[in-house]
Length: 350
Image 1 (tube, rainbow, N blue to C red):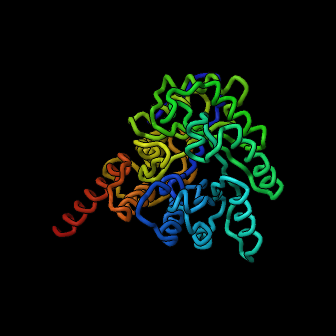
Image 2 (image 1 turned 45 degrees about the vertical axis):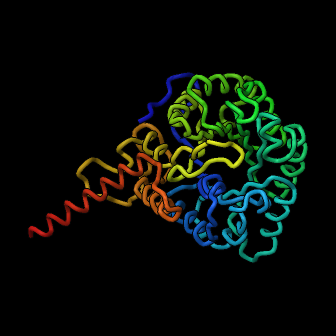
Image 3 (image 1 turned 60 degrees about the vertical axis):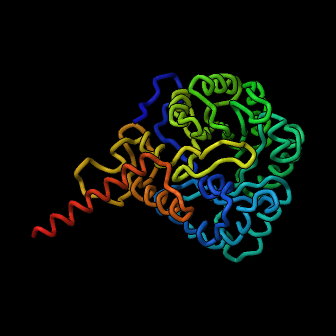
């Protein structure tokens, strides 16, 4: 379990986990996934206690075919109290689609915020949006302004904060400059993305030391891919530095179509377990339970049920004809199966 930090940083024990599986986790899948399956994933995540879920994106199906049908997905979401649902928009056209959807429905979808994105390098930005970083920021400024005027919150992403697959090592000063511009536009939070999963605790700390020269840690989130198995260690580093918001993807789903070789996001189940330890599902030998866990001994992640998360990760992975990559999820499900067999054996002896 990750210990609390001891530095003179924010003392809050609450850690916000933003579930990005339905968007970032699925966008790289080659095989079509129906809107009904996507909506079922979102609804299962909400029932598992996730209260910040990125549910899709309004991008051109030409560029990201898997995100087609987001409007239909939104119509199938079951609203949950205190849950915040967001969608990614790349430009004004995407925002117009969101606003039209919200205005023309008598029961509008439960969208409370949008996310906008750019990157720390021109090479990655050109591959992703066919624009330099400066051009993408100029395009995003009016999008953010219109969204805020419409009453939507706006979250920003900066991709490739450590290494760019096209131009190599990234200067942390560039990350700071881009994050600062997103905040100046009106983003309430900027998620710093280790898109390639190349980050280590040392390189993550170097970026945070630079970025926080003039940006509060309360305005930052971490987005770590687990390509090299360092995502949890990087989260620990960011926690020590004072960050209290992290993106994660159930079952470790994900990748990036513009970052060859990058594997999935850090698994939500693994983050929850790392923050809460065995308190997240009880002591060994206790009956398996779907009861939500509210708070562990060190970190508060909200009303999240690790058992339900593990079930959800296993379910969507089976839909995608693969195994979940969450180690915590696998361990919990194996324990559940062992307890089931023991119970059946005991019943058979009666």
